[in-house]
Image 1: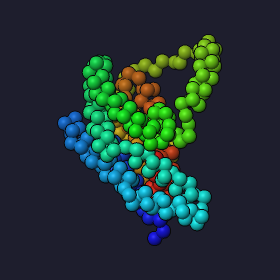
Image 2: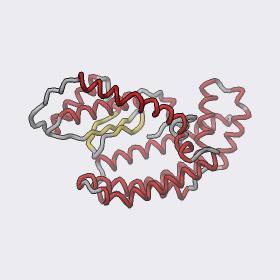
Image 3: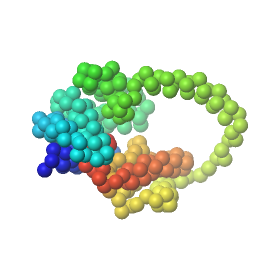
Image 4: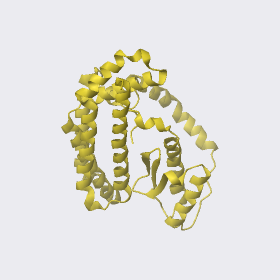
Length: 284
């Protein structure tokens, strides 16, 4: 087997681990009882450590070196994929496994506290857990900055938008800051007030209507589902897309808008080619 083919098989295993993590994340949001959070955090931390160790192993590094030496035999897709494999490896090797596990546990804890804090409108309740998440994120940024030769924020940004820098973002935001205030004022002066939708709209009916809208947009319920969570999101994997919404029985528009928004993500996710499962990019 060529080094590149061995890497494809290795990254397919990584994709399977990430897919399992995506379903565990959905379950925590939509189904898991609150008392299960501690053990779920341990499960997620363990799987993330396994994925991290697979990606950062000496064998993965050696296969990358060999594949890059043999890159003349790769087509354009494979060459681009190899480049992304190397980038994923570089990001992963910058972090210690203990930090990866600590982040998994800290974010799980903060998320459950956020639910209670949100219901009580009590930021002080969330603050200590959020501070821990921020501290670990800064630790991640510092480690990646040193390994990648980038500024800390740029090192984190590179994990989501390769090549984009905070300097470039500042330029984009400066342009918007000069344009948007006046534009918004002009829009508001011409915009009519929307007609109020009065009444009580049971959550079950909102969900049923949302599913009809999803179906009309082409969502395949044989490969996905809609559930309820504290905050809407779309996750899962291309063959098993998990969407959630939340409902306000006095405001039908908010739930339907969330469903339509997440359906856009879901249709993109479901439309990814099956070959994607072996790619290093994408964050379930």
